[in-house]
Length: 216
Image 1 (cartoon, rainbow, N blue to C red):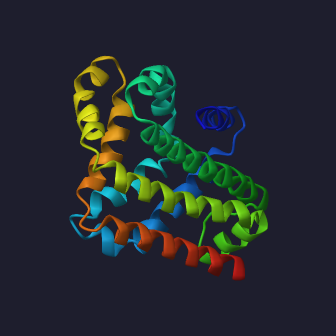
Image 2: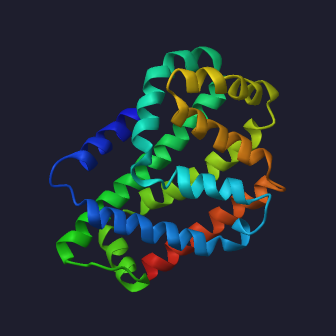
């Protein structure tokens, strides 16, 4: 999953990449998500987890440094983190890569069509032109599965303790972006009043949005 993300990072940083349409698209999608989940964002116990999904997994170009750090410390993580924690991270990076793949394709369509601004009609048209419903479904199922795994993981005291103990050494060694990602994901879920309500709300709304977009 990290190798997949690295390949996408190379495409994004290559000369001639359609960066402006890509950023326009991602900004519009973040705004759409913020509006769709304003009821959760406005609740104190749900806000941190919302921000993790909106800012960490839809973070545009901010993922580059963090993913490079993960690659460097993966041997250490494999030794100290339990298997289910590593699989949860793999789901997070697959979700990120899949989302980036869709954004890259849609950005190319934006550029080729000369679309400078997005609204729901133009976004829906480009969304449908890219198609690939099975992978769109996979993207939303990953959100659900990742959320469910995080909800279980945060109750494992050893994992939470390890992440907290890593803070000082991680920042001292130059792995601050990775540490912030791990803390944001795990600790934000510990604050959720009802993690399964949160996860099911996102899953149902995103699935409904996908159906509506494909239906035109």
